[in-house]
Image 1: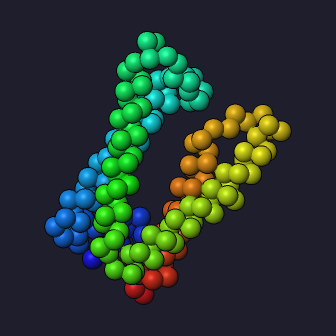
Image 2: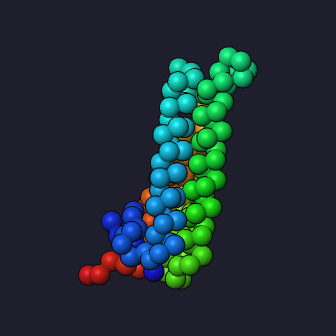
Length: 152
């Protein structure tokens, strides 16, 4: 079963066995590739990070990089779910608590920023919602570690 380490921010890869270890590594690699491509495309296609891909004739390489990014996301999600199905209830509860924290971060941080952005002159984008999710997920994964794993 997966061992949650790093104050709730990491899974010890050595604790996984066989197919789960392989799927976890594939998940990490494809998620990293997708994130790298998202960052590259966000910067390469516009000054503000809000992109409009344009026609295939103009930006053919960007279209293919976008498709590769989407495929990487699907592979990462698929392999993560395969690993999650084989884990114990503690890891599944960790996953649930982390995702709930992410949803709360999305709602309590991202949505208010989106609502207030026209009034404060802030150029709102998808990354703001994602950062709200990431902050909420990080806070709840640390809380999970403190409550259920940390030994005093």
